[in-house]
Amino acid sequence: MDSQLSNGEDYKYIMATSIGSGKGIEVLPDLYCHTIQIVNIVLVGHPNSKDFVLIDTGMPYSAEKILAVVEERFGVDSRPKAIILTHGHFDHVGAVIELVKHWDVPVYAHELELPFLTGVSSYPDPDTSVEGGMIAKMSSIFPTDPVQLGSHIKSLPSDGSVPFLPEFKWIHTPGHSPGHVSFFREKDGALIAGDAFVTVKQEYLYKVFTQEQEISGPPRYLTTDWDAALESVIKLEALQPTVAITGHGLPMERELLANSLKKLVNEFEHIAIPDYGKFVDKDTD
Picture (cartoon, rainbow, N blue to C red):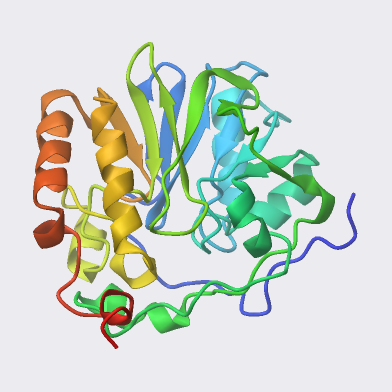
């Protein structure tokens, strides 16, 4: 086990939750979405199989909850073949250090996310000034320091393949973070979108708590490149997914998903891009 494994110095429990916390949805027989406070993890693999992976690792201090979910779905003493990250923001790597210590499995992410996963670089501070509600205003408390995964972190293969998931391809979908990726399975149109787009207005406390479903762009307070974010949504909409699991909010499928994604692409400036905020205004400063 790598002795350098560590969380960032600002690692802490975040007091945020939703009515979906602790609940899981079997979206497809081998795709299971579970909500940890305000963010989703995804288990890919058939129940009771030993051949599965975990995508993203939830909020800080959620390792015990995730271990319980994995045990319930895959059996006692089960462990994934790997952990695969859509990106390295605190709510997607919250339990990664504890889980790696427990399971001793590799972690994969896009090469542009590696500085945030090897203790090299911190993410920019969240934008508390951005247009939005209480979650945006309280985002200054969110951890931004990098985790240190040492030798456990590996780059996703350059050919677009996903380790241990031969039917999936990874797609670079930057904007929310430089190395953000999504995962797509062509045979059934299954999309794991991370935060490239979400199905809840993540900036608003009431909507996060109630999980009111509506298409939205990536969470505004941590999205640093809106031009790239739009290109990523265009790329995902062109795939014509039939079902999507996003990092925040309920899964969306079929006609609702198709219509919502098309609307997001056509009205991205109105729906997703905030009217003001430091990452919106940076080019005009």
